Image (cartoon, rainbow, N blue to C red):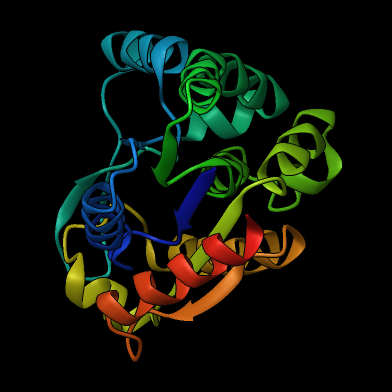
Length: 213
């Protein structure tokens, strides 16, 4: 089984992933935590090449901190081509996920295809790329076959937990809206990341896992 925790930075994905992995391991299950978002392999190489040629881009984020800007102007200019580069870059990681699944592991993804699609859509300046493109539709079909938990938090909470966040205010608002749309599209279970404790979250997820067996 593949269990996915998704949501914007600061929502608690890493913590609940580790807690669930620990709980399942104590039950004797073979568990692997994996991470897929964006800027993997080829995309990272291309990104580094562009930064060597044109320098890094920086922003002042909503907390007044200077942050490296990964939603670059040249990614927007590349548009769908950048989406293709990102897609090619996650293929090896997708292969790893499904190899572990075939080997009988329970896979816990601290970020997965929802996060990839939301981030790439923001980077190329097309908030519905995930729904319009063939690549997006293909990845949505894969994502729907997993158990998905979307951890929702408010904008203020995200900035409190991640004061170094690498987005401008408008980008962060847009990213949160894209997450909402994609998570609803793939049938994610919605969790309030502020009111629902990590322990309660993993207990609910575990019950859903048992109901699917």
